[in-house]
Length: 199
Image 1: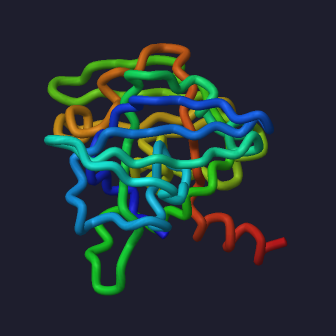
Image 2: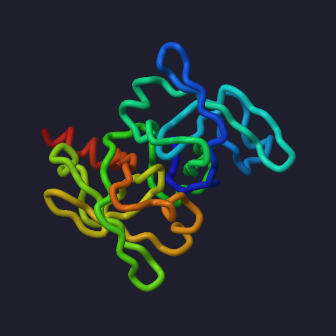
């Protein structure tokens, strides 16, 4: 489980395709060796992955993750390439501060970025929204976008928008987003449970 508060930006340094269509990605990070161990769960662009290999370089820690064909099909990982920046968060530990909201690392859909609007120092991002997700997305509710915990600024039947403050803009991969970028979205699990119990 995660909180949507990004620890680091990682950079893809290697993408290896396996015979079974699965992929192993290697990410260069600023994590310290004592923070990560083999088998650790790390949220990568909103996807919960397991560390399968760790290598130390002079300045960075390189983490490798096996990514299944199913995960690639259900996320924006098919767009990742060497040099891509991804948002990283270590799994939540007992006693950690929960500054965002509970994020499980299970992507609901890949949505399209419709527009980027700069408002003073912040950026307003508008994303497409499917009919299936409408019942889970509410104004002032929480949502995870590429693993980042955000508050829904406005929403209608076809889209929703969020505001990105300068700190989040510069400390995530959001500054690399362009119109039509595909992003991983996970709805708030509390909204999912409430909707389920109302049926």
